[in-house]
Image (cartoon, rainbow, N blue to C red; front, side, top):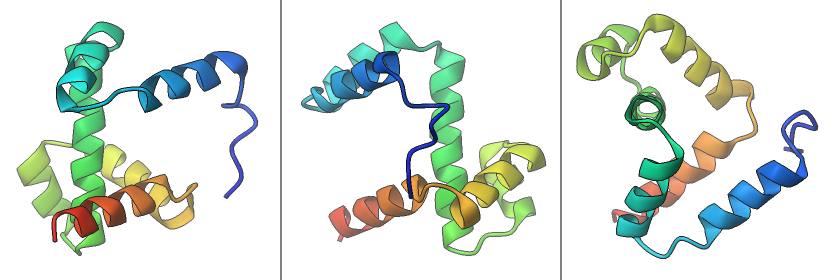
Length: 100
């Protein structure tokens, strides 16, 4: 899918180029601890887990119980999985293939 034109600008490009320069998990922790709040990071991690659980067929109730995510968050993630830019899909596929 094409990039959302509202998202694409030089500052966002710079951020993404910076992320691509991170070499390992420890560097990711260092960088994201500086650039995000703990709450923001936890929300991002929660959304990835919600996406993973939706992909393998868990119910909303299961997801709420395991992650504490709101049904609104689960709905947003589901909408992205079904109609978004395929970011969740390709990342979950890469994680799955790496774990084999």
